Image (cartoon, helix red, strand yellow):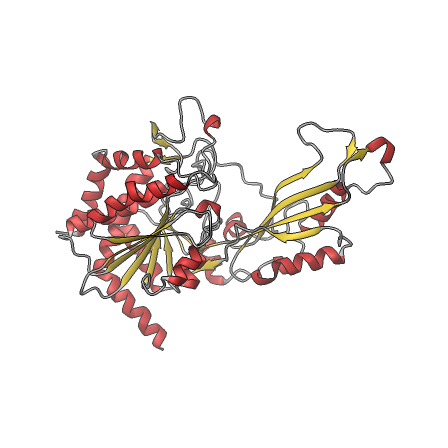
Length: 473
């Protein structure tokens, strides 16, 4: 059998409707990890949907409880071959964001796949049930074409808490690091650059969420009787925010800014255009760090966002000075940032500007480090070549995703070169009502991933030896 047989198997799997049929019951499970009453559903997704599938592929498995109380379990699985020369680790998450059931368009439900043209609506179709279903199915297509022999080991981590910041993932991977030892990581999450462009990214921006709060006093007071003699916490907080980031989105604290963009990253981003395709918002060309292209601002630089603010009663304003004001903020940051000292930089800056009365604290969850594999790593050129062979398209290389993923666990805790091949697109309504997967992307992704898993059999050992040789010198 040949590489083309593997690709043909992938095409037939999609065209026959088998992929749609396999994904539908997975979408039906309400695996909302942000809801405290979904532990049974989180466990059922693994036992009912994933484990029967991977057993047919020859995996052994174990469900591991989350070391962080109250959060979903982990599935650790492995498919070992006696003469394998190297191992690949793959990943997915079966939990989803809240359904927001009553906010979906008429006739749509987050818990049922509904196909309208090229769009397959349903919570998790894009993030991430559809993506890891594609990868496991593609592996099955390769096994069918190769007579059940890969020539390498496959290991799997599937978590049920990514949408709550992956609590416990780092601890589990550290505890089982010998069992999860591998030579390369290949996973799928997040969007392509655009719907038409097969994409490879090598890491992700980090995410640092923090809260600012000014508690001026207990209770509100009439603005007519006390206005002018009582400090307004909302006024002070908004002025403090303006010292962190200016009116054009430029970060004003040196300690929150990254090092200059490396040449290899600039070169990879030079020809990329962002914000194209249906449903994409119009890019604000005058927003963000001056002198950078939109692609450099999105993938190569840090951004500070105010995500939520509250003072008084926003839904029913009263003529009263509020007792406190609060803002939830986020710094998305790239490799080369002083990520260990963000909180200290914020505290120092607020004190220096006369805002010592404003509390600043790191949010308990949603903290992820920035990571990026060297674009010149041999695994990168191998993956790009394979993707082009399978799709007859020139793939897009992103040094890192603009969003954040727990890639630091795989890159740092497990020490792996990381390759991410996303199967969604930016306008998929991820984390929003009407989330959808494009059937055209799914079809192409199955073929693309079958090609990658086949080429690992043929060329993976060679790349493994090349990297080992480079390290020894």
